[in-house]
Image 1 (spheres, rainbow, N blue to C red):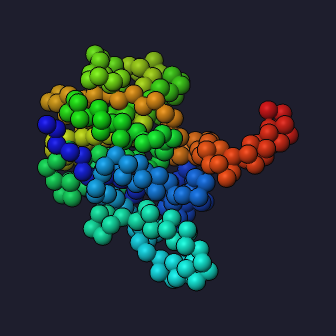
Image 2: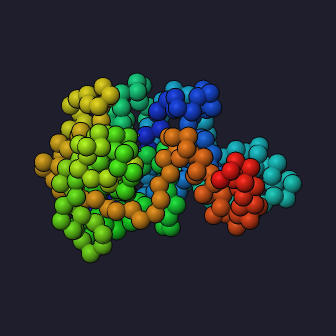
Length: 296
Ligand code: G1P
């Protein structure tokens, strides 16, 4: 029986330079898609997968993320006074229970691998999930829930992957595809490369920012070796761990929006807006008019 995935790590210390000036004083994880900040999408996805403890790796200027997951007593009192009980209930619905969320600090931006390593004490000796808040998905119950189902069959380490434009392999971690694993669409990963040029990529299946990892990853991250871009890369530690333990790819069938890029973020707003019954028909009309005006 594989141990249950109870804890998840959310690296939220990144600077968000691609979204300046919006992210000068506001964390990029608080950018909104429709009416929810990015961080809320990933916390909800983790919760839908049965995660019980959320570990956020924060940095300077990120305090508002912790505030987002706390009561806002004055606001709630005002809403109640105005009879807006539905809004109060909606706010209460995504609140973690006391003790369910922990924060630790990555003092220097040394890379994703270093951010995950910062969680080693809070995670301890059990397998755990990692969710990158830049990447949000449209799927019910969600990508992490699909991965937990795969993990329950395969054990080991499970990485979600999705097809990308073969010209864009240099923006992501790319995996090599081996034998089928389990009863669904999962497969054995034969290799991983961080941001390879298209002619060096083993496939066009990219790592979409969702991981289930065994705690032995921390021993490799502890070596703090610098990789691509001079940063401590999670992918490099996974490559080292894959020599000791199996890694499986979970082909995600939904669509991931890379909200670390402007085009992904804008598209996510439209896609999630079109999914909302109260917005959909008006938004479609607006889009038709805009496309006609722009010759689309
Ligand atoms: C990180 C990972 C990469 C993954 C990507 C998904 O890269 O290193 O393997 O494909 O996230 O967003 P970053 O976006 O931090 O450059």
